[in-house]
Structure formats: structure tokens, C-alpha cells
Image (cartoon, rainbow, N blue to C red; front, top):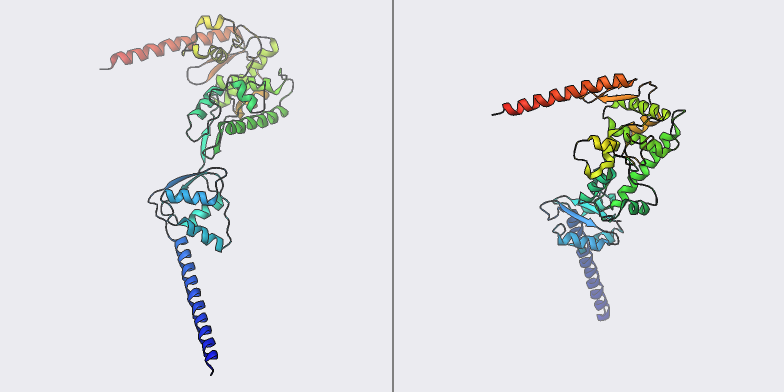
Length: 355
């Protein structure tokens, strides 16, 4: 065989050997990449990761490496490129469990398994109290601090509306970093939807001219009783009074009008001093809702019980006595006040008897 032929064979053999070596190296490198991709990660405890809008996958992997949850971020990128995988990372907050592999982390991102928080607007609380809950929540992005209720309603796209009563009391689930305005919009839209539905199914011949008046009445019912079976009957009393042009004489409206001046007790001067919310001195509904009414109170406002009652007074045990006449009402009131005095004396005696 000629020397040139031998040289060609040697070159071909060397090239084949090199290809085999490179192939083996590539296979070994791929196997290592896959092994590392599936291997448990270095984090010894859960790592909370916040992903903001605009961050790339490389940015996120860099964060994870810096927080000790990922050993080789560039290797993970190469592995994903080889598999032509381009996971989309939803912005939000993620809790990366301890020892999570890169593969498990990527699957979390692909599934959008962000941490969810919740906040509750309680039935009967005021808009100011709901706003305070939002302001105190560390997972809410605060954009409304210092703004007036009027400015907040304008930001919600409802300029000129009063905020009281406009937000549906419920539990709202959100991802950490959600703005307070976004949560308020959820509650505002929910109340708008519920109120429209309730108003469309209202009873006939109500002394209410608009959904807003139904909302106002529902808020007063909400504050008057926490007893479910009483709501419709209390609504019936108020509807009877509205029809006759009688003042509602509702203590919760007076308390709302007092604002910070209310110190836990209503005085005679509070009932006789005229204000827009004093339903002892003014007939009709107060100018705005006085709280966030729930669905049962909204339904009671538009479906009041058919009753001849015009009065009610607390029993002192969570419910109310209802009366058709002022004389019967006054008698019930005297009984209530007498029982209240007895209870106070008994409490004072128990306190004095303590060692």
C-alpha cells in the first residue's frame, strides 16, 4: 500500500477516533447536565422568590443562585436550550421548597404556582376599616396611602361616588405584590354585580327609588342585627316607617355620623343634635351607606317581611323585641333598661366580691 494511502487511513482513523471521543464527551456532558437538572438542589430551607414584571429567565436563575437554591444556573439554561424548552415565568412570589431540583423549580414556573394571600372585608365594617386592613397587609403593594376616598373612587373609574358601602364584604385572594387599588377594584366590581342582580329581583311597591337606596338601607340593616332571621323583619319595620314618613330612629346611623366622637355610648344630646346621619331628627334614609352590607342584608332590603311592626328594641340577648304600637314599644324598652340595670349591678357585685 502506498505511503499516501496509509497516511489517509491514519488520518481517517484519527478523525473517527476524535468523533467517537467527542461523541462520548458530548454524551457524558449531556448525561451530567441531565443528572444535575434532576438532582436535589442545595437549599436547606424554603426560599421565597419574588419575580417582577420584565425579569428574564436568566435574571430569575441568577436570583436563585444568589439565594443558594441553584448551583449552576448556566447549566440549567443549556439543558433547556438543548430540549428547546422556553418556560414562561409568571411574575409574583414563589416559595421554592428546600432541596428542589432545577427541574422541579422550572415546573413551578411553568405552572405559575405563585404564593397566594388573602384579605377579608368583613360584613358590617366601614370602608375606612377595610382600607386600614389593606394598609396593614405587608403583601399588598400600597399605592393609595394619603389619598382621600374621593380620589380613590376616581382612580377606580367611579368619580363622584362615595366609597362607603360600595365594596362587597368577602375574602379576596391575591398574589403578594398586588396593589391595593386592584383589590379594591375586585371588591367594587363584586358589589356592583351583586347589587344589580339583587335590585333586578326586588319586591314590588318598595319605597326605594334606586339600587343605591337599597344599598343604604341594607347597610343600616347590617348594623342593626347580626341575627339572620331578623334581617327581613327589621327591613319590614324600616320600610313601614319610610312609607309613613316616620324617622327611622336607627342608633347605628347616629353612631356613624359621630365618627371619632363616638366613645362607645350614645348620649341624649347625640340623638337630639341634627346631623345628616341623625335618623331621629330627619326622616328618610341617611345620605350614604354606613357600612359594607353583605348579601343577606341586601336581600332583606329588597324583600322585607310583610309586617305591621313599627318599632323594635334589643332584648339584651342578641335579638330584638318587635312592636306595632308606641305603647307596646315603650313597655319593652322599660323592661330592657330595667334588665340592663340589674345586669350592671350584678356585674359590679361580682367585681367587688373578687379577692
